[in-house]
Amino acid sequence: MEEFDCRTKIISGAGAVKKLAGFGARRLFLVTDPYFYQNGTAARVAAEAQAQEVEIFHEVKPDPTVELAAEGTARLRAFEPDLVAALGGGSAMDCAKAMVFFSKTEAKLVAIPTTSGSGSEVTDFAILTHNHVKHPLVDKRLRPDAAILDSDLLTALPPGLVADAGFDVIAHAVEAYVATGAGVFTDALAREAFRGAYGALPASFAGHQEVRLRVHQAATMAGMAFTQAGLGLCHAMAHSLGGMFHVAHGRLNAILLPSVIATNAHVAGAKYAELAREAGLGGSADTIAVRNLRNSLIRLRRELKLPETLAQAGVEPRQVWSSTGEIVQAVLEDPCCKTNPMQVEDFLVRRILEEVTGRD
Image (cartoon, rainbow, N blue to C red; front, side):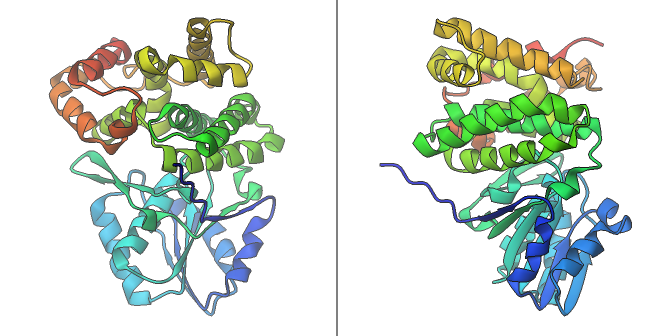
């Protein structure tokens, strides 16, 4: 038996934030970061809700901490909103989701992503950092009531952010497709997300605005897929390494994914090959199709000017080796390992670390 829950309402297209008025908010609590607060975007988006009272929590930082979420939760409780909106990338959305969850408010939550990557606008996940370790929260109550995908908010994305966030979409789609919880509905979403992101990312990276909504929609589809199918070893390692060394999440996925595919291919080769063929990358034999998928992602990584190793991403190899035990332990405890297509063991994590660390 298979279940698929698609509760989040999705509003997509240019000028979609105007639909905020339709939620009939009287008291709006907007969660965002200093960038969108200072450049006036937060105020403009808040005005679209036509609420009588507005409070803007603009202290969100990358890799939001448990302490920051607690501060925001206290502010949210004191304000007592009937609508909460999250404006920003994955950090703003994850922080807002955690705040709504912990406050136990009955307010509706609307996620408005400004990057095309995390898929947090439709997932049951929120990532918070504590003591330099990223902890995924997983609960159906974390899923937003609505997601607004407004392409007008994507015009100023710098190439580096397009690349980092875009490879997160790729990793979400690939991992969801082979995850132990995958099914016919998640497979369809993951395939379309992979095709869309893989095909459009180079053009978006080059600054072509007309493809950015396509990548944005792919990010949401990938989020819908992985929130129900699960993720895998790539994300478990990215969470551990990101919390410890503060490297962008999508960048870590770009470094890790080819090695993870090679590792998982022993049990998931047929599905990797299927995904490769759906994207026009496959060969006649599964082994060739898997190799083509892996090599195509390596080429895409280079085209997007992303690092190939942790050393190229600014992490000194001796830092990795001195922290290997801590890294491995965090990976093995990460919930994403539970849905990896093959059982994750200590030696697998160490082997991938050896492949991706690089040299000074």
